[in-house]
Length: 108
Image (tube, rainbow, N blue to C red):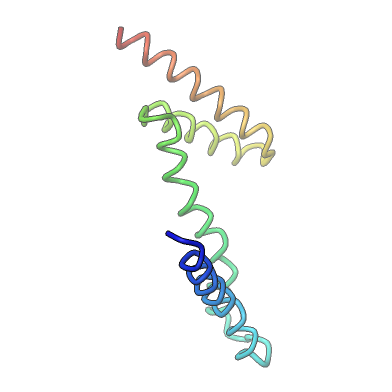
C-alpha cells in the first residue's frame, strides 16, 4: 500500500467515524423523553465494553481457556464484592497464574 492509498483510506475512515458521531447531534434538537430510548442509550457503553472485553479475557492466556475462565470468574466475583479495580485486576492475574500452575502440574 502506498502513501496515497493510505491517506485516502484514512480520510474515508475518519469521515465515516465523524459522521457517526456528528449526525445524532445535528438531528436531535430537543431532549429525548421516551424512557425506552433513554434506557437503551444509557446501557450502550456497558454492552459495548462487555462485548469487547469478554472474548479477550478468555483468550488472553495464549490458549489456556480453562485458566482464563477461572481468572475471569474470580475477577467477576471480587468485582461484585469490592468494586475496586486494582483489587479485581490483581485477583484475576493471581487466579489465572495459580490455575495455570495447577493445570500444568495435573497435565504432567
